[in-house]
Amino acid sequence: MKNFNFLISDSKLLDNSMMLNLFSFGLTKKIWKRIYCASIDGFSSTNFHSKCNNKGPTLVVIRSNNGNIFGGYTSLDWDSSNNNKPGGTNWLFILKGQTPQKLNNNGPYHTNNAYSIYCYSNYGPTFGKIFLIFLILNLFF
Image 1 (cartoon, rainbow, N blue to C red):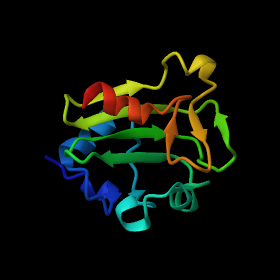
Image 2: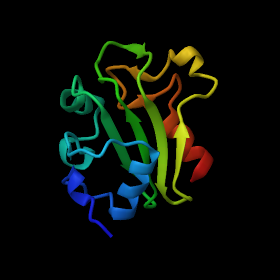
Image 3: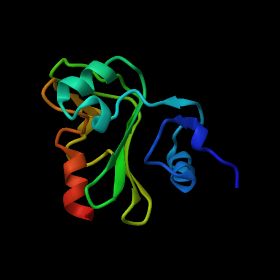
């Protein structure tokens, strides 16, 4: 099996099978650089935005306290505008803890693609109009 770990530099969470799942979900095979790590850079929204704003496409990977791995992808730039951002390519995923799956960001709060991501300076990465990452935690774990 080809080793894809080099495609996301410095990742401590993603193994080869997880990378293959992300590629099958639509992640572009390019060199991805870790720009923010909460356990190193701090868990505040200020730290997230200082590292991630205006950086282009972003893959958010989260490991819960019980070891589940999930997150989201957006092709849009994060910013601190306190507004919803429409458009782009956006999806959520689960890699460990359940069967790996892609969850399209197209639920009832994604009307007309108007709520792709929410860029609020007091929040970390927020997909959709509601806190879909927290919704994943409640539904699947």
